[in-house]
Image (cartoon, rainbow, N blue to C red; front, side, top):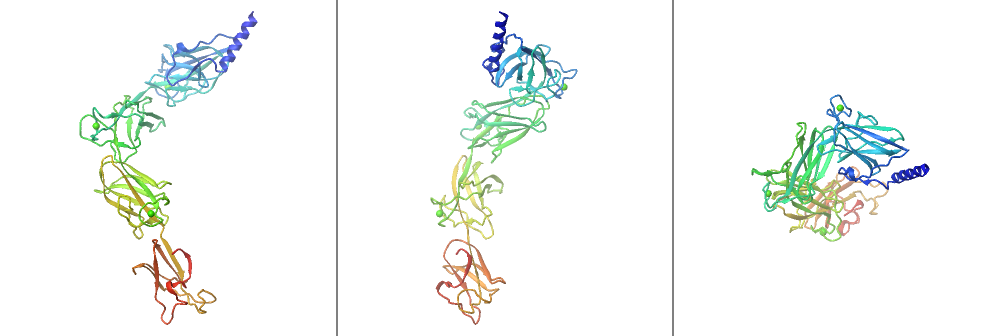
Length: 481
Ligand SMILES: [Ca+2]
Ligand SMILES: [Ca+2]
Ligand SMILES: [Ca+2]
């Protein structure tokens, strides 16, 4: 009969080890009454946990650091709760009848208590938990042996919360929350410890509220990230619920929150409004007409910026991506100068063209940037523009004395240096000129696409060799044109 009971309890152990018993874990503390009790058996040990008020946060229990009652401790295997207990008035929690094996421990603290620095494993007076940011804390793996008591300490400290409300302005953005404005969920908010390295993060609830709890006292940067298509609302002199952030042109904003005074920081309210945007495409204008046509290639790396016309303050920037697209966002209604800076790859602006989608940027010699001035943008307006680029051509060649009249540079024929070669457009305007080098080479650079004529003056007493229509005898050694 005794033998039969023994087998039964071993079978129970196997079930537990397979994780078929226990309760699936959530972030919130479980109800201990819902966890099936462990059954006594031969091959079991126990776990004793001492939770103490680690006032100085050093991870060890000092003389005046008493036990804390009412803290839930759970014995875990993988993500399953095997057993649980709550600390008594002395801060002790005891879990018995644990099948010998390897476990971790979870500690669930109330919102106003947080785990302190790790101290050591397997000691009642040392914190075995790490101060990660969660609703619970996890110990290192530990072993429970048959007939023995495993020890763990847990250091916790009074903690504080930072909370607030997010809204989206409806109608005119007046900078304060009023009836009719829309509570805004999904706003990402973070707290970063300036010295302790702790990072807390949350998103606002559908009703606009948000709260970060279990924050240890220290100095933090509170950062709010602007959801797509929105921007921070405007600064205001109005009374009422104002936004802690009102920056123009920002996709995120931070402020310092100091919890060293050991008080909760509520009313960290953040208002948003629809952003005006300037978006569009940067492209290679293959047919040189100043418009983006189907099949023309995108141009990445064009730096765009919106500057206030009034004082040239840069409000928001963007860079065209691999698809040539850019969005300058988080703009309020205002008059801007929209700057475009070409990548440093030899590209320049194409011809200018009329209309909203025509290229408004003229090429300037030696300059990679230009501006669209007096660009008027309304609150919340989305404007599309297009910026066309070309890679200007280089015309290059050699001037020489064609002694044998072969129309090729051969034998010991002399080159001609310091000789002026000009390029004129079809109206006769000279667009580029260069004098040949000591090697007889001229190079005409920065030539936009088009039809041109090379114009030269023969050296006195000489004529051009095999001079034909269009100067075909000038040998081109490279380049286009
Ligand atoms: Ca301590
Ligand atoms: Ca408002
Ligand atoms: Ca085109």
